[in-house]
Image 1 (cartoon, rainbow, N blue to C red):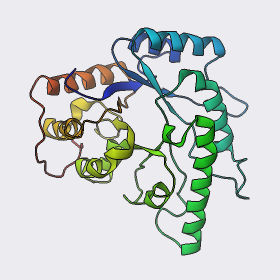
Image 2 (cartoon, rainbow, N blue to C red; image 1 turned 90 degrees about the vertical axis):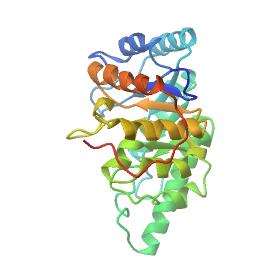
Image 3 (spheres, rainbow, N blue to C red; image 1 turned 60 degrees about the vertical axis):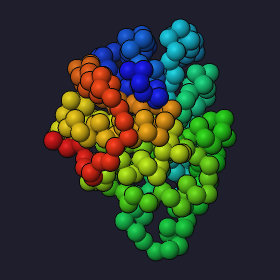
Length: 274
């Protein structure tokens, strides 16, 4: 797949095992692993130990491997505008835990459910200010605002995050599946978003999302890959699936695209539904 300029990756939940066995399995097969981390209050979690972090570093160093880290909660301030909200506190713990991996990016969601369908000007303005403050706090922990990659979400207006992104120098995560679930053209969106995009998530839709790319019509998959080549996108493309079969068949679909000439072409609007 050397014709592609991007780093091709997938998630840390491909085989039914913990993070380390997954990364060992994926080493040599991918160029990036998205570490999907969780931590339940007074319950289980999968944050790596110091010993595991050291092993993850060794695996990465020997296999031209990078990591992206998905923060576990939608980022927001507490109701009193303080940074004591659980999402901020957990982001801090995850960043502290993974800092030595020097992640390619920290992927995050911004919690805007209360205003995503519109609302009073004052409410929207307050949400935007809180979102900016949250990003500034977490960006300092992450080692730079560009390390934070804000992901577009299903059910939100296409331009919902633009007022925030205009004021803070974070990166983007473009989730192709979220765009397609809302019947948006991913190629048109990428044309505007790619200059600030550090990570792209791609997955098929067959009854639900995060399915194999084998479910994606070939012309739709080709349209996205051609756009990434045309733009010389050098970030991470994460095949965001969660089983070995979906991983193998997805990579086979991408490899099949690589076996033919990839060139900039005009594409009709469409989505990844079947």
